[in-house]
Length: 332
Image 1 (tube, one colour):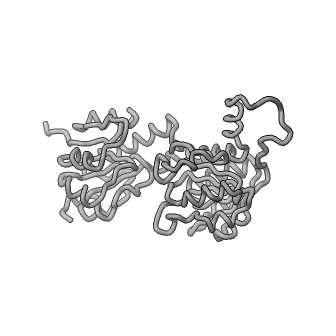
Image 2: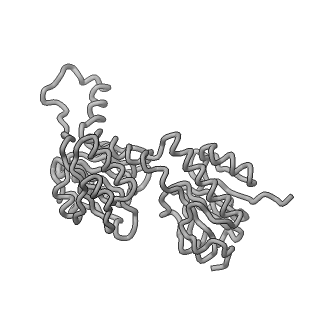
Image 3: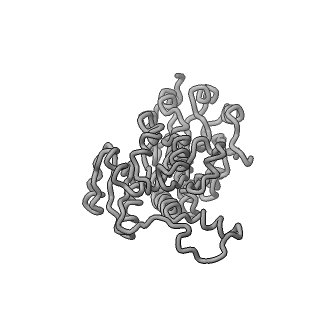
């Protein structure tokens, strides 16, 4: 019987996928409370056939060259900014991700942050727990209304569209969106209107970010962009931290340029900036948009499917670089 392929799993993932990986592979699972360092990652993967990675793991040319047997990288995430995909492709290493299954959970989280920030929920919670709540206050803790307001979606893909559906159907919001591609379904079903970013920021009461992180979107939301928004606006980011210039967001919140914000992602993660975690009108969640049992199980299953297909040399269900499939490992 042939030896099982050797695999390194950089963090413990749900049993729905991990049990299958362990059954089919000689798998080592990193069990530390923090991700492995880059040096440890290179050491562990040096003689591996496959790798299960997270967004915290840097897969660059030096890493790939240090793992000459590596055939497949299965990223336990939708995003893959941690992987140098061209470098992997050049070496015949296939890379997979876990799209689709995060849509509803992430849209729910975006709306959770939106309504909590708009209604100053965490401020009220802290006020109650501190013992300051003495009586009902007619002018206390006033937030923003939601019904009939305008939602601006930056990036009208699956998640942005799912959030827009919630806001349109539940709160009768008007929907604006900014995207390089037209979303005809959103326009037909939700009455969404495609506009340029300046118009979206000027007219929206709520701005929610669902775009990819790339050279054009890195630092997209800066001081200038926040000044374009209404002083009553609520800003939400469940996409990627580096899309926002956080010092500019902090200043906008401190000075009342915008009303409030909710973040599920920061740059870096976790945030090291004291003011970011102390602002009363900012909610920061620890990157938990996909953190439901069903979603994380589904991600683990896709991750295992991708890994096992890549190891077997068969078509990967969700491959980022299909041009590398079937080519085998190459030297760069």
